[in-house]
Each structure stands twice: as C-alpha cells, then as structure tokens.
Amino acid sequence: LRTKVFSCPLPASIISDINLSNFDPWDLPGGCEEERYFFNLREAKYTKGSRSNRAARSGYWKATGKDKQITSSRSSQVVGMKKVLAFYQGKPPTGAKTDWIMHE
Image 1 (cartoon, one colour):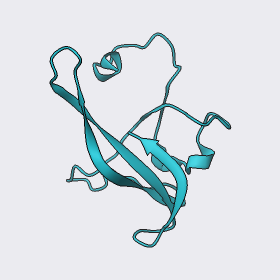
Image 2: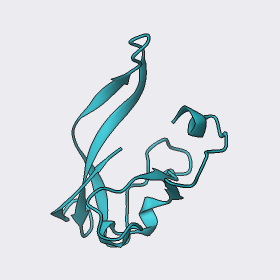
Image 3: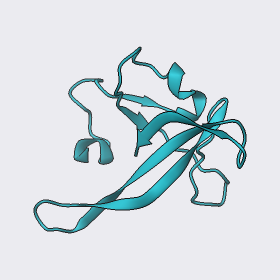
C-alpha cells in the first residue's frame, strides 16, 4: 500500500482502481468471487466537505460498528483506520439492508 499511497508504479494491475459509486455490489468486476479487492477512487459527498460519497446505483454503503485503528508493526503508530460498511438497497434512511459487506 505504501507504493500506491506515494503514487509509485505497481508491478502489475492486479488490484483495479474503480469508483464504487458507479456499481452495485453484485455488478462489481471480478465475477462470482466471494472476496474482491479494489482501490476505491473516493469522491467527496459535498464540494466543500470531507465526507465521502457512499451512494451506489441502487443504494448506499453505511458504516457499521466502530472504526478500528491500524497501527504500524514497527512503531505502534496509528497509520490508518478500518471501517466496515453494509450495503443498503434504496434511499437513506429507509433502505433495506443486504448481505453485502465492505471492509475499507
């Protein structure tokens, strides 16, 4: 991930760059695999804000539970956060929860 964060070329395009808001979870590239990996091209929900757009074609991703801190194995410094999101079909706040889960 460090290579990706610093915009250095990766050895191969094994993990695709996509914008998740262009897809419903069942239409994501990768066929019928249970697990798929992507670099999400995040976009802001509002032009002057920092909130991420979590809308998809027929629903939205909603964070569930608490964020988990990711720490460096070398220094115990926090280097990121892990979120778990569930996909809801429909419009917020009345969407129906599905079985689709994303780890971000």
